[in-house]
Image 1 (cartoon, rainbow over the protein chains, first blue to last red):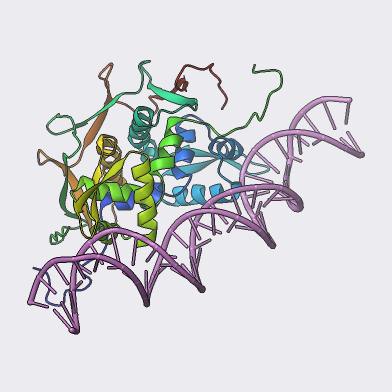
Image 2 (cartoon, each protein chain N blue to C red):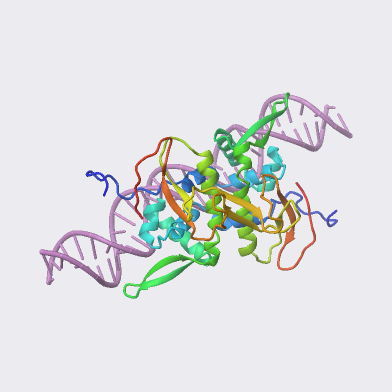
Length: 160
Length: 160
DNA sequence: CAAGTCAGTTGGAAAATCCAACTCACTCGA
DNA sequence: TCGAGTGAGTTGGATTTTCCAACTGACTTG
């Protein structure tokens, strides 16, 4: 089904979920983005609000910046000081944070008090995820593997 | 603004995003759930498809099980063998995976070929996240902090 | 009966994270 | 002008996680 010299038949599944996690899945990355989404842009405050150690946080912010998810905006010349702001890419992480918050507030209810989130209309967070094409709601299981995608199309390959 | 004896003014923000990440944010956890969402339920195959080392994967699966996200289903008596299946809670992680895949396929396009995802209607993955209450689409920035939530209500507290 | 499958375990090396303290360049109040 | 404070890091060493390859035990299959 593949080439004659079938290399490793069992390479990990290269998919966009895995690729997204390479950037957003490292510890503290999503919490840092949460802070910026909430309007917190400065290093000390992001460190405090996330609980990340400062050295690790520096690394995360640099990675996110190099991936184009956030950008540094200078707010003081001397000494040079920067704020961290979401780029368009970073702002579009919001649906992930929203889904996560909604899942968590449904399934992680225990005794500890936690900040909840809501939509700007004032309602409690109850996101509905639907398909932009057909308009139907995504149900668990309606996620299917599609074709391989790169700059150009490549030949399909299916294993599971 | 708070109590007289203000304890640590700078505790990390306890919110549902952070709580969700405690369970889903560890390395390999979401990829393991991805596999189960795609119908892969057995240890060896999950290990292969995610790329996780077997020892770490065992730990993750145990944690997810103890958190009620997945469950082990025995499929062989002797030797005892189990499959890993999503619980209702686990199935509802789908919107997170969907948002992640969509974000990634928009912003992580590089030369490497990757499996894409689509809705079961056949369309490319373009999820729309909207508020169940008002029906309006969530725009970046429409996520607001709500009140503290626990088993009972607690007094509000705002810092940022 | 030898080889293969499946779901793990094990031990040691490597990498990531944590933590507290320290730096540097300032600003602010007395 | 001095001392304290702020903001954004950096540093070194301890701790925790993860990686990796090999191994086990209980089977099944040829």
